[in-house]
Amino acid sequence: MKVTVNGAERSLKPGATVKDALAGERHAKDVCVAVHLSTEKVEETTNDFELFTPKGSMVVRLYDTRDAGLFRKMAKDIKGVSTRWVTRDVVAMGSFSSGIEPDPAEGDYRRYEMFFALGGNDSHTTYVIIARNPQRRSFGTGGVKIGRVTVGKHLLDSIEEGEPIVDIRPVVSETSRENIIITRDPACKLSEGCAVDSRVLIRLDPASPESAEQVLIVSAKGYMDVSEGSGTFMGCRDDMDVKIPVERIAAREAGSVAVRNEGVGTGHIMVYRERRPLSPSLNIAGTVVGGMCLAARAGAGDRVAVATEPERLLSVGMTQREAGEFLAAHGIRQRRTGDAADGAVVVDQSPEQTMLAFSAGEVETFGAPRGDVHRIRITAEDEATVHYFKKVTGLSHKPIGTLRTQFSFPGSPMATFYGDEGRGQDLYPQDPFRRCRRGDIGVTNQSRPHHGLIGVRLQDSKQYGPTGEEGYGTNILGRFEGDLSRLEELGDDQTVYVTERDL
Image (cartoon, rainbow, N blue to C red; front, side):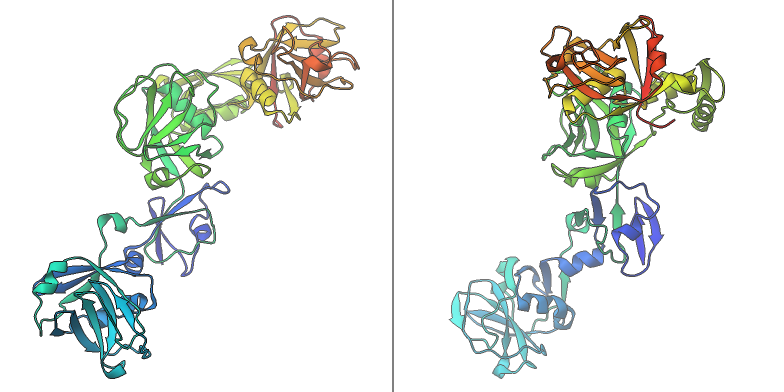
């Protein structure tokens, strides 16, 4: 069967699932997928049917009943039968064979309700009846109804005996043709003609490089967690501890991707579902060019895969040679600085913002010997301490972060590094250490004057932590697993490169 996946047609075996359709696609776990039902599938499930007569057409809204299901299946067989009789109370059309088991129970029929009736309790002479007035009677089908006329009720006063039902068709509006279900179930079965959207594709705006980078950073893991899904926009609050300058300001059209540049929630990403006027506190970072159905329907707590045009252009963590090949593949020139050897590790890139790099056409990659990049292991369970450390070092948005020494000398029991005093005010004290070991990384919490200071312990101590504070003033972050002897040789204002990865 033919199925469209993210705009490309694929041939799948009958009975294929969402998992089969997404084979080979970049697809994070537990993300939502939009499945567009084919027109045929919509026709099977629509609850509105239109009956065409020589006098005009009526729309019947089906109930969720046994006879409504039978009517749906028999619509093509009923087409062509004539109006058999018209009375003050009913309009009857037929007859035809239905297979309905006779049931003498009476039913209460409201005005404009439609139902089956058996002539002489014989299913071979079945009629479709529409009530013109309320009544309680037995029509041989147990009082079960098919539905109710919602449009064209006036035709019941003009239909004449002998006039045929010219046609019966399911009502499939343009909206219902876009009948979409949102699912996380990889076993969800597909049918012929379905379309699957597994990601929201965003084309980034060169006029808003910082806002575009925020979108790239937040979606670097392959998805966004939806914080709210209002009638106006889908929002993501994954990273609001950022500074965003004022960039391109414009009206927010449906599909616009905006990033807040000031106030509470700076860095908040919003994908708009409907048009809104410009706001000076919101930059336009890009536009959705694919998978808008996902952005339009995702709700709070959902996870939506995100792809971007262009992809993020970050070479930090690669070797100089790998960085050159990566940049060249995107048409960008490389200018090596620092350690320019092929095997040196890129620890910094300028410009770091993807849209600025494309605009400049050239990127400076600053290299360092592999031995100058030290591995750390974060073990803290306190999210605030981890968040603080990653923000200060840059590990929140790139694989290699930096620390700048504040205090160190040969023989020192610790090496301390500059932090961020403002952010450090939010570091609540955690359980104090009982013994601080050589290699422990810690942060001074808000209980002490030098809150935010970062340190690495170079000598074991039961009394003092990595920043020289006692236990109550220290939040232990993790372990420095690199060469500690290198820290013992540091002077003031020197840079140390750290990573959580194996290089």
